[in-house]
Image (cartoon, rainbow, N blue to C red; front, side, top):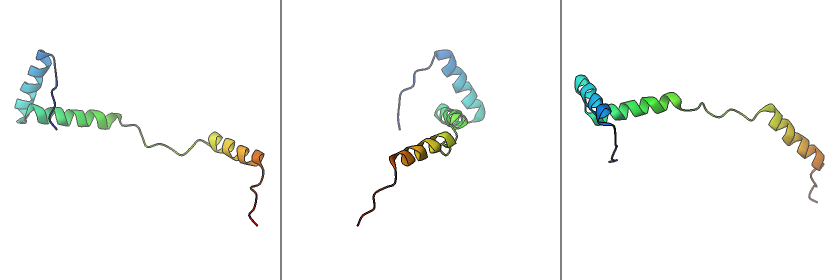
Length: 71
């Protein structure tokens, strides 16, 4: 995917120099950096509903009474 990215000139130059030291393109450096940044901040998988939420759901069902049976 192609896109335009606007960076302060000093930051862009630092990125170009660092990428050159590593022997990679600025694009590759930015892709690796963004991936690492996002991976380190990805929230953990959503856990099971809290016990309180389950208890409330059960209480609502009990309050509603037994389900009617079909004949």
